[in-house]
Image 1 (cartoon, one colour):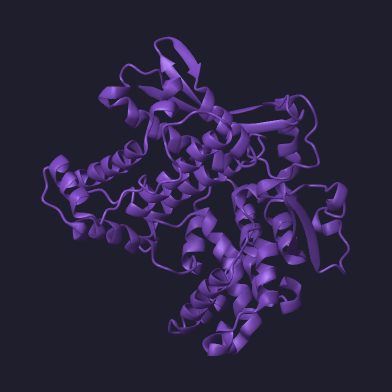
Image 2 (cartoon, rainbow, N blue to C red):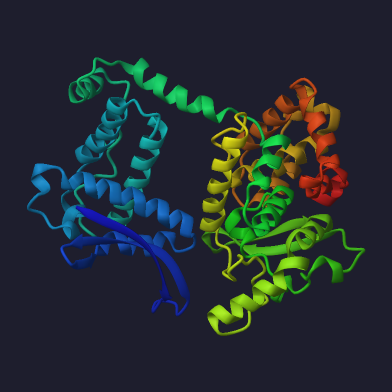
Length: 432
């Protein structure tokens, strides 16, 4: 059975607003059938974020394709799968994914991913129950989660894979994958190598803004050429008030919540030098030619063809650049993504905040003001444990021989990543 996940945009009759989210479409011969209940769920729960919508749609699609392989679902229409799926089916789906991974000796999906996907799937059935739709899954019971430490389940996996395994085999696969994701910021050399392999300077400029602010890719895509409303003060750096060192950028983040991100003027200067001054006008003309109307001032970042850059484009182009980077430098870590820029800001912020005390126990004393600054800047409900996580990361960097300080010196000297120098020269108050 083929189920396609497709992103759609339309005006919602519920609120008369433009919405975007993924939908699941079943292919039956020459027919294309919308699978109603998952699509209602995706509309209600994921229309605030295209990335979230894509992930949720992918998980539900995988589970439905698994159900299709079970004998008792052969006579059931896909539109009714939610009614007949059970807790045991979710456990069996998790076990089958582990079987496939073990049999092929693959590193992914990891046990953690399998468990997280099952947890996400349970959210779908919880929504069905709360919305009054019948479902065979009892969300009140804990029998939906596979226990991969249970000997009976391990025996089942052994039987299905025709391999004698124990928990250590699965753990070994997980550990092998995790070894490629060791803690640490993207290094100076990795930044330089990655940036050299982007095929469009717009992504270098966006990487620059991400490093300096900790914003998500989807938020950076919303940064305007000329602001409006609460952001009316935002303009190209060259015509902004020179005395204004920190600029507020009000964004609508996940869950329709607004927050204010602090952007240092040097980060905006970097964006103008790397992209706006040389490339924006010509690309705005291509936008007008392509879409039949002038490029709105709310859009700044455009591709070589005049298309507005999306978070998916950032991910795809970073993936292409990473493949080239790995070929040119064997030390380049394969797990590096654009999203790693998110870790740079809070780590460096805490280093500047604590100074030499970062290596003492004083740094572990919970700092509510610092916590709130991280929440406001990064746009998520950071908790004390996250604060300590970044303290640990900062300490590792500071103690790792002299590599961290050498990176800072290189960042000031290397023209390829000159934009990052702004981070190391701003006053502490500028970044709070």
